[in-house]
Image: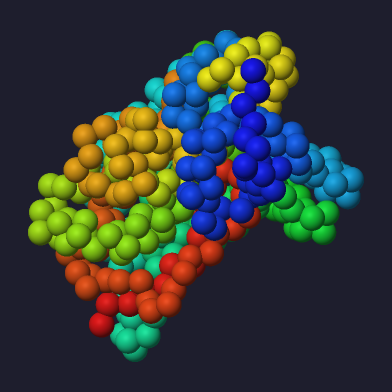
Amino acid sequence: MNIQSSALDVGAFDPFDLNKPHALWEQFRKEAPIFYHEASGYWVVTRYDDCKAIFDDWKTFSSENAQKPMRPMCDAGRKILHDGGFTAYSGLTARVPPEHTRIRKIAQGCFGPRRFKSIEPQIEDIVARHLDQLEDAGKTGGPVNFWEIVAYPVPAYVLFTLMGIPDEDVPKIKQYGGSRGKMTWSDLSDEEQIPVAHDMVAYWKYIYNLLDMRRDNPGDDFPSDLLRLQSEGADISIEEIAGVLYSTLFAGHETTSTFMGNYVMAMMHNRDAWDAIKADHSLIPGAVEEMLRYMPSVVGWRRKARNAITVGGVDLPAGAEVLMITGSANRDEAQYKNGEALDITRKNARTHMSFGYGIHYCLGFQLAKMEAQVLLRQLAERFPNLRLSGGFEAQYLRNISFRVPTSVMVEWN
Ligand code: HEM
């Protein structure tokens, strides 16, 4: 059976437009929970149980398309990538077992919660330093861009502490990360793809240079650990190590920046929750979990059906490319009572799908939550009167997966 709604024009759906998607997603969940979207070629899935079933059945639903560019690189861009020696595709997310299992086990060994916990004092410092800058910028009383001053840089400084990357390289890697996000999950024109292709070549070279430096000069960091394990016999090639770094140097900060931008807006629109957090910091871990459900950075993720299969009563053909709208699943009434509302005391918030689900579940989830908690506490302590500046309305970049605001204008005086 194919569920298509006559009242709903699913063909008019623009999956790249993440400006105000929630009302439409809700309508999809009710009237067309799974539908084929002609323009993108993807089967769109919006209900919680269906997304979970797909994530869970990794034998049928392979992640091989998770990093596939939504719009293939134009000829000129492909030439730039080829001539520049760019061969990266995916570290982990688009790899499938048994390769994925082998590499993930090695990466997980060097990137566990103990390592994350050990840098908590640095996280406190990095956040404090950027909130000082926010305070300075706001001295004139005018609106300031929280996105640019705090959310955008903080996760990069944190991640690069683990990566052994010097602070002066942060702007460069942030730029590469932005290009990476656009290349894979946006619908760039041919012209827009050219600078992105140049960035990808530079990014890939940077990773190989980093590995060369760490080979000559090992440190207490993630690249050095991977190289050491390899030299001790771990079954991972240099190309695979470079791939893991290529993934992590993107996944480890872009996602968290976006989350910080989104959750500050969620807080500002929900003053009761903000007041409750200010009065009782013990609410913060639960609040972060709920904000991951309610305003996540990743709202869509992809899988490909290896064989024909029925999901939620809908027949998908072999080879079907599936776009799970996890941002919609996260608000499904069948899973979350009053799912369209933010409730920082919600008991089952942590069942959200913002870190995916199953064998590819995000490797950095503890770090992301730790950073979010530190920032929220320091913000509540230092900027109790924080609010979005008058008339500010968020605009989001065009993307099928990452809901990235272009700015978050705040004031507090
Ligand atoms: C709010 C922040 C973050 C969000 C929303 C997020 C989201 C995700 C999602 C949706 C996936 C795919 C899961 C799947 O296919 O089931 C993923 C995988 C991954 N994430 Fe994150 N992530 C975040 C932060 C981080 C951080 C801080 C790191 C590293 C320090 C990280 C490293 C990874 C890696 C390496 C994978 C690949 C895992 C695999 O395929 O086995 N992420 N993340």
